[in-house]
Image (cartoon, rainbow, N blue to C red; front, side):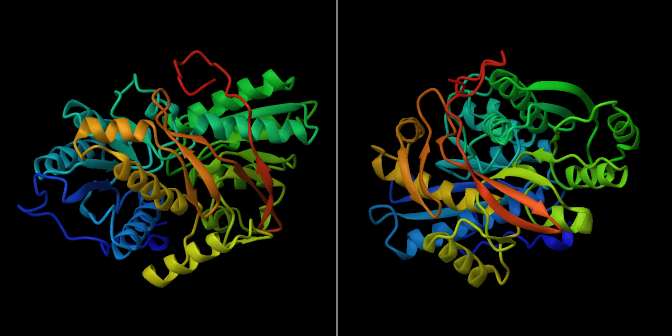
Length: 403
């Protein structure tokens, strides 16, 4: 995994210093508290690089109404305690806005620090809906993701539309994202009329062994139409490989965190009849959602970092900056309250996958975007279509985005 991740490269701005913030609105100062190492690096590095690429493009094009974006970056090393410390240091250096890691558990300490200072914080791609409900961590906290509620619900709707009526849920318990993905998948599938015929759990992490869970599933007298694996890579890919090795042959569906080359590398030739709901399909994908803007993004990323993005998570960082810059251009000032108000009314922005609607006063995440369904067959990935859901089920967790 470490070999597959390039370091976060600060090409878009200066490093921090005593002159980091000007004390006025001459520039927008964004603090990046992301992981360049540890288990979250595969989900932070590429979105972070893509965000910096977009900042460079905006600055080269004149900035936000002539005002440049400046970045101060700190490596949080996939450590929650370090995220809180980094947020404190970045706020002391005068940032206007904080970007936190691609995970609720990891982002929470930094987001809480920013909330206390009334500075908006945006997770670059945390999926758990608690990152966006305005109540769990506060009303200055946002996420630049559609969320695991949308991912789980989209997977359920897509499977039901295929005619699959029975599902077995294999739940990774390692992080809030995976737990909420499984929860929302189950609720949506049952709301549609599907039946959950069984479920099991595993602890996730770096050393996944689901031999007993696979045996129980394989031993069912009637196999389900498919298995929903609520997990994230590389543990999710390992679990899928072990299911196939145990002789479980039914289709497998999962959330966006199964996306990317890692899945193919881990599952290998046994990677078939696997589907997940991601954000786009490019580079490693055949029959992809081909669009000139998406192709241009991939080429620009490759030119800047000498490698193609390994998953669609990179696009979330790129699109996030577009949304942040759009909001900052509408804000009365770059003060925390004015930026928050502008973010809450941001509306749709143009991205390489079309118009994406960001944020509202009650839902601080992407509120309208199609999910891309990717099929894995014979060790290769193929674009299988797009899926939208008209509603997110109420699972009793206070999710203000579920409506």
